[in-house]
Amino acid sequence: MCLVAKSITVQELQRAKEEFMCHTTHELYDEMELWQWDEVQHNRWARALKSSHRMGVRPIWYVEEAEQEGTSCAAVFCNAPVNAETRFASGVCPLDTHPSSGVA
Image 1 (cartoon, one colour):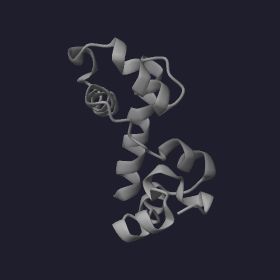
Image 2 (cartoon, helix red, strand yellow):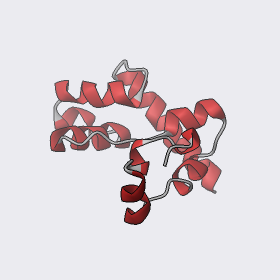
Image 3 (cartoon, helix red, strand yellow):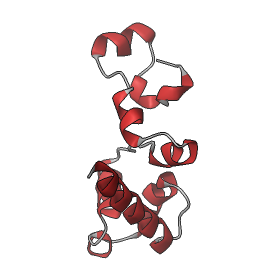
Image 4 (tube, one colour):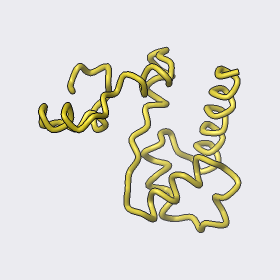
């Protein structure tokens, strides 16, 4: 079941990138500045990035990196430490770095 949901979600991301002529989620985020809300509502990725752009928050998603490396999305997100003690002790926000980079 999880693989089916992941597959559908990744396919929807690919459709959004194709529709808005972008190669990455970062480009798609930047592109959302040019589109009206009504024009992006049909795609969950476009909606999420449009909302993030309107709030001025650039999301950090490792979907593309996980797909290229063959790593599961669950492994990427589950391995990212999120407790405040780790975050501030190292001086680096673990959510700002890729978990496989060894920085955290």
